[in-house]
Length: 348
Ligand code: NAD
Figure (cartoon, rainbow, N blue to C red):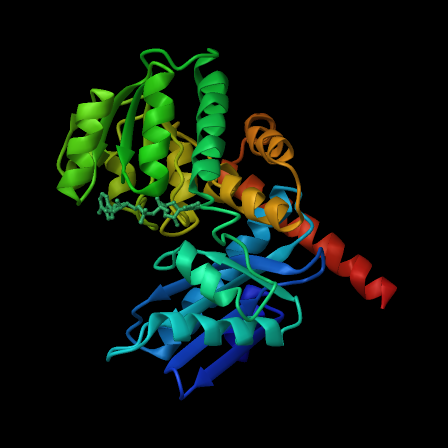
């Protein structure tokens, strides 16, 4: 486990179990050099504890990179609650998790993630202040969608030299919280949409509301479009799908889109512009971090809109450097984190 932590650059890993509620949870703190670690809480079924630990560590590191590039005064953290196999009381489980978060004294701030919802955050908040996405704060997904929309505009500007999305053809994979909100923004901006989801009802809603064309889930990779927009699962760009993509740009909300770093290089070699996932989807993190710090809505909107400039600037840097965009983004995030770590060590 220490080897795993070392290779991810993880600061600390915490475990908690509460026999009374059945809670078994893990909090991974990647770093606190730039401020408290922040990141969502997953509530999903894991095959075993090792898989949950690996997920928490990998996701915490990703949150550090995201916070660093978004210029937020936070490190990255992530928590996972192992979904019990038997009967359990969800509200009590979440309240117990609140004690776990509180025990870290503000080194980690939690938020919604896969499998958790606003009511869970309300229950967590019964026992800790270090929680976001409660009923009075709301869901970060609309901000994530706004940020991806800004990032798509920046990508179109860089790739095609045009400032509007009229008639730009976008293939969206996944019409959940972010995908649906994003489809609405894109449709209103005049884009043409091809969509897919494994949930037929979501597809039916998008075809009716946005005049979108529907395709089967696996066919989305082959759609001849300007932009492929992954808003469903992670690791969807792999050695097989990368060669099927028939687009000029990949820009979407999904976390960990590249199955491995080599796929960023493969996209680059194919002349496909890739918007690094943790840069383009940072709107939700910006929302939760600034809400937690009690910033006004306007300040949040402005910072989310700033994803346009950040991405455009990164594209220019990558082009000048003749490097894949994901490598440039990683390098930048690592430099920011290393710098903060050096400053923290000098001050100590
Ligand atoms: P969600 O669960 O609401 O939506 C995901 C959608 O993808 C669902 O409708 C699901 O049916 C669909 N889907 C799953 N497998 C699919 C497949 N094989 N093909 C097509 N569709 C499939 O999740 P969300 O909150 O909308 O997040 C979407 C992605 O964006 C995730 O990767 C998430 O980690 C990432 N993300 C979300 C936020 C946020 O604020 N919600 C922030 C940053 C990143």
